[in-house]
Amino acid sequence: MKSSIHDLRVFGGETLFPAPVHVGQPNLLRRDTLEQRLSAVLSSGQLTNHGPQVRQLEERLSSLLNVRNAVAVCNATTGLQILAKALNLSGKIIMPSFTFIATAHAMDWIGLTPVFADIDPVTHTLCPSAVMRCMSANTSAILGVHVWGNLCDAESLQEIADAHSLPLIFDACHAFGSAKSGRPAGQFGRAEVFSLHATKLVHSLEGGIITTNDDELAARCRRLRNFGITGLTEVSDIGINGKMHELSAAAGLHSLEDLQTILAVNLRNRLLWAEQLENVSGLNLLPVPSGQQPNHQYVAGRVDSSKFGLTRDQLITILRSEGLFARSYFVPGCHRSAPYCQHSVSECELPVTEMILQDVFQLPTGLAVEHSVILKTGQLLRFVESHSRDILEEMLKRSVLGHHPLDPVFFNLAAAESRAVKVTAEQAAEGSLLEIRSHLRHADVVPEPHLMTDAERTASPGLNLRTGVH
Ligand code: T4K
View 1 (cartoon, protein in one colour):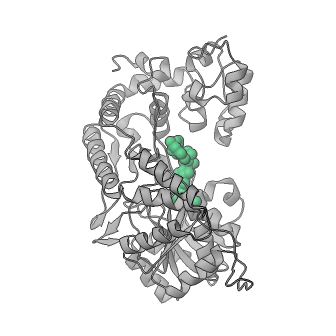
View 2 (tube, helix red, strand yellow):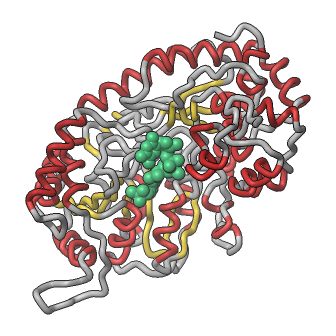
View 3 (spheres, helix red, strand yellow):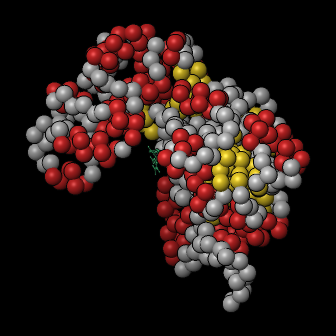
């Protein structure tokens, strides 16, 4: 453990976690069984186009989530698009800016204009009164996003949607296995879309699911995911290829078998993280919203830098340099990302969104995160908090900026220091990793070995990976 601030990796000390720990490491158990399943699919000869694995997955999901229809798709982004097309949406769609960029892209890509509404400070999900303020004559739907496994205030949103005769749909990518008053995600609104991406609670490597109790809507989604084809030669709609393939469905079925184990491990991890952060002033995990049973897919919290002594980005820089890859989803917010800040889609004020974007962070959880990692990180966080004044001073002295693209794991700090590498604030703000990496390479500083490309490894046979010096 660290006994002096100079033991911190960010100042040249030893890495606490030589094997990197990520937010989003896939939950994967019983690999042998998965390999057998995949092999059986390959032997079957039916690799895609609504085969038995996809059908079985859809049946399992509709019974598990207690919803009439589950439509498997290739990923949630495409699923959201298929759903919006199936609902015949046009014009504007109200959604939070505080979401993964895919939510906004999915809508914009098919010609809808995202209108970003503010969020609730406790659940981080779409705020019903903010939705009211964003309503206009061109609004064609409301799209809520269940964030971190917390469910939206679906009842209030439904009332607003009904009052304006608009469809309410949900991006449920973070919410598989979450429930509210015992009612599982998947049944809310007109339809919901889950992601089965590798980083999700259960996954099919890549994949998504549209759930709905509306049979007609489900039938349209099924047609649209298959080019709009309705018969051997008949085509009814302009559809797309949104099919899930058989290997993916088999992986999804495999993953579903571990659902209860994953939920239990996530809950255990959440409790352990809470215990570890209890005595760290200024680091607060988000509370579990009352009446909700979240899946704890993400362990999210906020930094109160006036108490902790460092900002969120400085904290993340320290953690990531130690090999614990904490995140700050969804910085900078959809409304501030390049494609959206250009046009005037920020029609509404986003004070809560702006505030949360400043200080929110996520810690790793899931099956891949061992107890010892959480305990060690807890110790580290206590150390950092109690030495925050000295750490801040040293960080400023050494120009270690708390900004993601300057993440110290991308280069060897000791080497960077000795060559007085400077990365400008503009580059940092631009967030162009490639640019920064090329800058560093130019300065004869190399990425850490696990972040090197094959070409870099081949080109640097004599390189001392620890110091970055030939
Ligand atoms: N709506 C919401 C609210 C979403 O969160 C997402 C996806 C979507 C819509 C769209 O769903 P899909 O169309 O993808 O089905 C990750 C995921 O790629 C993305 O699916 C997810 N949200 C988002 C929240 O997180 P990144 O850019 O953070 O991915 P990446 O590659 O940095 O992965 C996170 C970490 O996980 C890595 O640092 C290492 C680890 N990892 C990841 C993968 C893929 C592994 O260890 N192994 C792996 O195979 O977006």
